[in-house]
Amino acid sequence: MYVKKLNIGNNSYDYEKKKQILLNWASIKKCIWLQHEKSKNRLLKAIKSETILPTPLNIKDFVMASRNVIEEEELLVILRKRSQKTPYRFAKDIDEMIKQGEREKILFLCFPFISDWFSIDFVKTEYNKLLTIFHIKDDYGLSFGRARKALEDKIEVTAIYNTKRIRFSHPSYAEALPFLLLEDDIPTKINTKFFSKVLITLADNKDAASDVAHAIDRNFDKLPENVQNLLFKLADNKNTASDVVYAIAQNFDKLPENVRNEVLIKLADNKDAARDVISTVVDNFDKLPENIRNELLLKAIKCFEEVIRIKHDDADAWYNKGYALFNLARYEDAIKSYEEAIRIKPDDADAWYNLASSNVRKGDIGKGLSNLKKAIEVGGDTYIKYAREDHDFNSIRNIESFKGLIKNTGTV
Image (cartoon, rainbow, N blue to C red; front, side, top):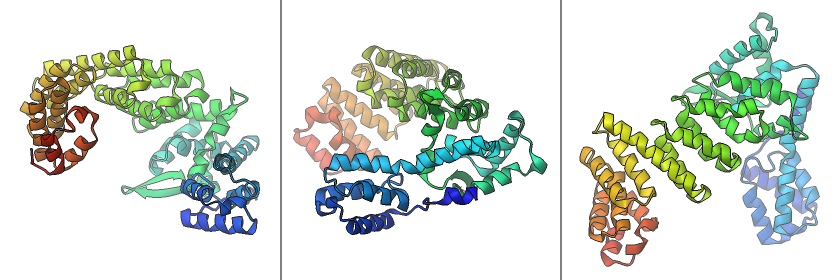
């Protein structure tokens, strides 16, 4: 009975099917936005997302709520609100599991809430370990199978790169998590007794640590302080440092500025993560205070210099040092680093290209054009496209030799 209740209104459809249902019901209910081409097209574009109006029930709710609305922004507000029903309803179903004492199911759901990349073998192994930690009795080793069977309408097993992975059968279910973690801004029982506890346990597992970092970043403001602090622990781990940088980059605006900056500064001292820190600085250049930005770049440079001290012919270290120096506007020093990288690895098109950018920024147009030509010869037409769009070449964009270079390969 309970499983059947979970199934109501939850069948998902692809875009064409959603579009057909939406337009049919809108016609039947005489929605006025249907006659307004711009509003209609805006809605049809929005529902291409899997998480927008994922079920027929969501679509019907939206049609009923939007019959007399024509303004685009108002329609999008209703669209988001009505799309949220599936995650919200799923969250309520999980709350019911708590009341019914169905801890096996909740423990199982923690895995796809953390990541959609866990293999079924990994989940089974770790789930069985967690049963002991949570003092859940496992009758004859059947708990995993029972939980999976009970949740089969929400969970699917998908083969990716020859590995069977457990994930939610629709992205809307994953979006139930924010509704579960806080209630009146206070961490819930599901948060503190299950989700956070599983995060803490899996943080020590090398096969899950990177996924834990991403889960913490995505939900940082909803997690207890001891779980938030796991981010610093993972940043200290050389095996997960780069994953933490990537997680920060993906969730840059979701993290408190002080936490984000403190973790990045710690990671900039790590030679395995320093290159990724620089990329994060560049991608979020205007969002970082200048003093933090410069500190991160200088720390990264020290890391690369230490690598070079140990192994002078490390082309990647020279390249990365040049990249950091360029972003500090130290173009002459960047040129020297890129030239060393090319001396060691002459077929590195990126190094030739960045050397050309540095030359032009410094004002040496001739060398810049010559090195850009070499980047195109080594790396192909991709570097023509880069140069066409790159602001570093704005100062020479009207020079005929540059125009010829980015129009035809090998022409200066």
